[in-house]
Image (cartoon, rainbow, N blue to C red; front, side):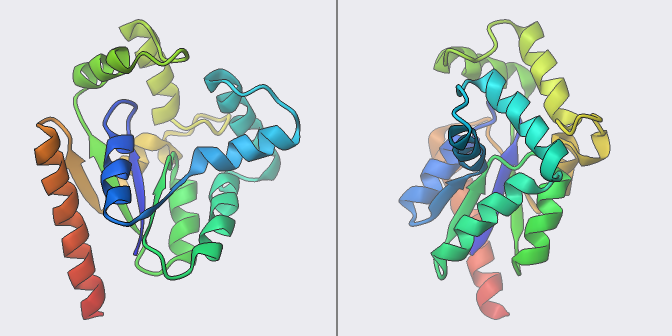
Length: 193
């Protein structure tokens, strides 16, 4: 089983990935493919430089380049359950669906205020410090980092295309139950085919 995990900043994508990892999934972060490309070019890696480099990479090599680089890793993991984190566009969705049979997207969602509070609590150095800064970064993501800022291909549209939505507004136990429900459903339906 190979699934893509997407969602807005602070929704809980990493927490869902951790739950899946404990259930035996191999986690592939799309961000890692970009980091590897940056290291090859001896670039400093920060959230800002990562975003800028990703945009330039997409402009130079196509909007699905990060998906293509990630897929190269997937091919080496034959027979494993895999969760891909960090999907950001419908270009990536289209690429994965063209290559992976039964590819499913799970979007993790939560209200904006709750997500911002989570970001503030985790307090990573590059995280936005104000709600205005948070909204500004999110607006760019929602409309796509593709340079043209085309909302038809951004994160908002990708979330709308998701096969499953997990509302991460309750307890950790609630979230685990929801994740297990999705995985159990997918296991049963994929076995049926």
